[in-house]
Length: 157
Image (cartoon, rainbow, N blue to C red):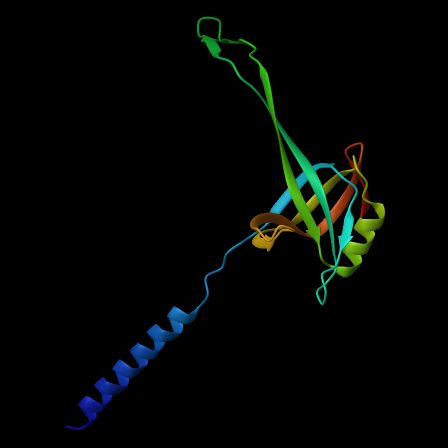
């Protein structure tokens, strides 16, 4: 007589605990960015009181596309494409390098106009400018920087 209710209570307890444990499992997510472009300015090294130094530079990425209509001539199975205008867009990215070895080598060797490949994560933050105005900033925190020369890998930091 007592076994059956005790078993039900135990089963409810185990079910409740297993639900609690599964709700505590963190979901996996990913924040990865890969950029290939040209450096817009020589890197600068900054250090705020009591915080880690950082090397900062800008990187330009470029997109190009052709606008216009394409027509298909089905009788001859030829594709005729009317060439439209070529459009392009340049996007500027702020790159921050915090890793000590990578930070120092990047500061020493990256120069304006260098072609580099950057891997890292995107970060959104706020800062207060000189006029005490709060500003929002988006930056790429670099985990890896690869220096390219004429499209081939020259040096990996």
